[in-house]
Image (tube, rainbow, N blue to C red):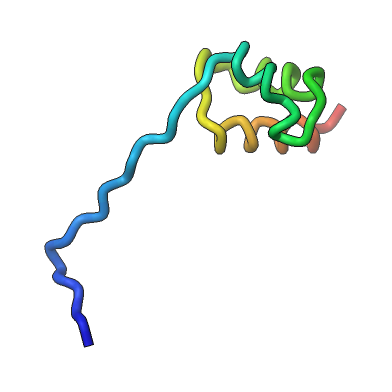
Length: 66
């Protein structure tokens, strides 16, 4: 059996970030309308977001109390 060395480090590759305009143009790739994505971006309060950050913002936006 192969054993992993304790000194081996896992290198995390940073996620690509996208501007608000790029995210809005790709709203369909998140399965949402541009209006939903725009609302999610507004509450995210960041200039550039990664895909996972956008997905989290959309979930938060859709489940928030009105």
